[in-house]
Length: 168
Image (tube, rainbow, N blue to C red; front, side):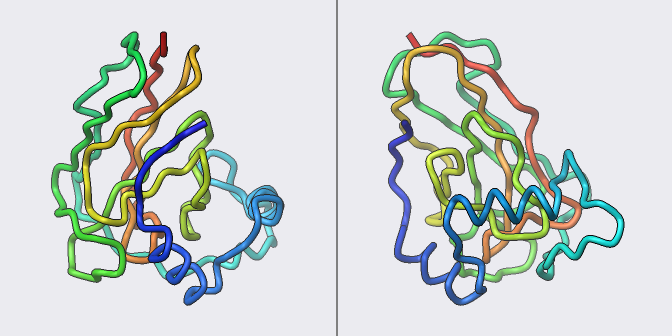
């Protein structure tokens, strides 16, 4: 289970405005038929892709802490950063900016739709770059995705390497 503070009202409003709100089951069905970054859609499949904001060449996102392979205790303190672009809150369409999303124990989401908001996709639409998560003891994977003002990954997408941590 993941606990994090983020602006739920903002996320719901943005998802409703973009028509992207759906239940977890609908999201899984849409992702399986539309494909994802690791599993592109089959030829002839309509993805319902949304317009994407261009990223800046050589932009990267990364975890400052914890490091890959670290053993940590709860609450797990995450610090992350972006190089090459700026950070702006969700809804702010300032050029060359975006905001962070942490993917917990899941594959990358579809790169042409808003990132889901659930226990595995933690949004930082307030523009923050640090958080505390409570994770069950054991091994967990974490990955960052940087996305635009509507939570849609940039084009080309900007995401980190996946790291693995152990929670005591």
